[in-house]
Length: 336
Image (cartoon, rainbow, N blue to C red):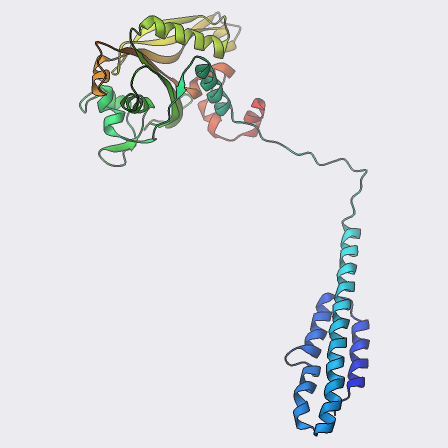
C-alpha cells in the first residue's frame, strides 16, 4: 500500500542519522534512483483508480520535491562539515619555521657560453646558427678536406648516411654563412658538435664549440691577433699573457694555436706557471674562399674555433670534463 506520510517520516529519520556523503548518496539512490522506493510508487500509480491516482500522485510529487530539497540541504551540511574537519587536521602552526625553497641556477657551460657570446657581440660580431645534422660537403669538402685527407680521421664522427653526418665542428656554419652573405662578414657560429671519441678527463663525444669568421678586404693576421688578445682580456682578465704558436688546420693558412700563461700551473702555487692552449685559429685558406665563390685576390679573412668546455675548465680550474654532464649538485651549486 502506498503511504506518502510513512515514507516521508522514514526518510527524514534516516537522513538525520547520516554522517557521511557516501551514506547520503546511498539513501538518495534508494529513494529517488531508478529502482528507488519513491520511483516505484510513482510507477505504480497507473494501476490505481483514477480518484486515488490523482490524490496520491499529487502527494508523491510534492514528496519528491521535498526529499530532493532535503538531500541538497543535507549534502551542503556534510560538505561544510568535511571542510571544517579537514581545516582542523591541516591547521598550520605559524610558529614553525618556514619551508626553504631551493632554486636552481644556470649551468656553468651556459654561463660561459653566454659570456663568450657577449664578448664577441661587444666586438661587433653577429651570431650565425647552422644545422647540427650536416652534409659531408659542408663539414669536410668545402673546408678543403677532400675524402682522402688524413684530417677526416682526426674528425671521425657519427654518419647518418654516406653523405650526411652529425657535424664534427661548427666550421660548416662558416661555409653556409659565406654562401648566404657577401663580404664584409663578421660572425660567430656557436653550437653542439659530435665526435666518435673515447670519453676521458678532457674529451667528450658531445661538446659545445664557438667558431668565428671575419672576411673583408685587407684582413691580416694582425687583425686576428688583436681580436683574440682582446677576447682573452675580456674573459680571463686584462693582465693575461698570450702567445701564438704555429699549427695546422686544412681550412686556414697560416694556422696557429693561441696559448695563455697560467700562473701557478692552473692555480697551483707550487709551480711557476705554464702555457695552456685556448683555441685554434688562422687566416682563411684561399681555396675555402674559392669554394664559396669569394675571390681570394680581393678578399681575405681569419677564423678561429674554441671549445666552451675548455674555456670553462680553464676559467674555473675544473680538472674533469665529465663533471659538466654528471648533474652533481655539489659541483653545480658552486656556480649559482
